[in-house]
Length: 478
Image 1 (cartoon, rainbow, N blue to C red):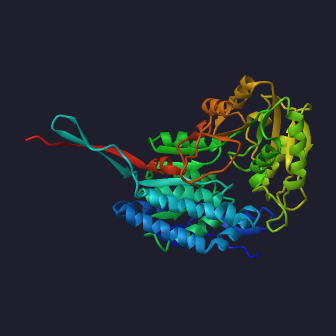
Image 2 (cartoon, rainbow, N blue to C red):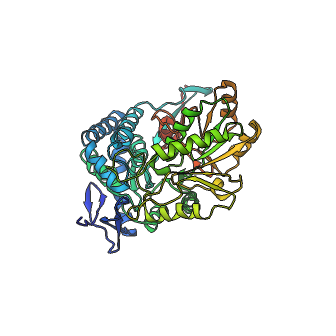
């Protein structure tokens, strides 16, 4: 495959980086080099922020209806080119090609359309007289220029979650995709360029140094990232130096609590799908399962059988696969290291190995026998590895579920409505699913607590995160 040198998208055009440094972008399924990406430097970041800053005044003055129309046209254009987006995303990530449109491209289109509607539905308090002869009103305004960084597990989806609410609210943005998955974000920029004024959406390519330069730059008023806890802490430290607003969606270690009265076959199917989808590279993945001791063995036996029969991995166009390759060589090494370093009392029930010698494929894995304080329970693995622990009673299930540093997502599997509601109240996670795990809708918020970060994606809550609140008081006396 011919290598192509990728370009940044700044002020409405694809332009070469000022940097002479570059690195290869690999196809995770074949390990072939599919492109060369620049390591954009401070001059590139300056240019992108300058374009966004110059475009802000005019874009922030557009009406919500005008912004809505632009987003709807972008969504329509993306939908018309869905096959091209799916091809690009599969090449970039190694994901199964036949299901990508249904699983991710259509969701991205729907989410853009949601934020298009949100642009015209800003809510606030009614005007009122809270002091004699004075009327107060609340204005919601765009923040300004926004810097955004997206991860490699859902490159297109995460780009949409970032840029769509930002520009719907009247902001302009500079977006940096992950160094391993830049292609679909560049295609999105190409599509958006037809409907957005130059400078409203800019894309800068690079590595961690590029991201650090974006965060440290004085222009953006808000930095929004989706990434690791380590990255979130670094961004928080850097952003605090000039009091930038921050929006951090970080890691997760979702507890999946299966009670004795759950429908075990349905729970196994739902949990396996939610645990192995996207090779477990999802911060909400159902990979930390807590099962009541009375049904533990039954559950494990069924889960192992399901993993062997249905949770298969392979190249994007292979028949009958549930998930594709891990995203990159470093992630394959990380998952391998987790399994290789398991304590002696842990048992790998199935999987636990790399599949093949070409491509970053790892078998669907089930691990039992771990203790609550083991690293594989406490730390995010981000791979197709489901751990299963047994609990004795409700109190222990709740204590273990909450006993991690993360607080993003969780699920409860039971036929007891009261128990489900009690756990929904007491689980310290931003989302609680009941008898399901992982569905997302544009209308509902996504975001967590503790080391999972703060701020919301999707929903009107996510949209409002890209606005600021101003109080205007008028004297109305004689």
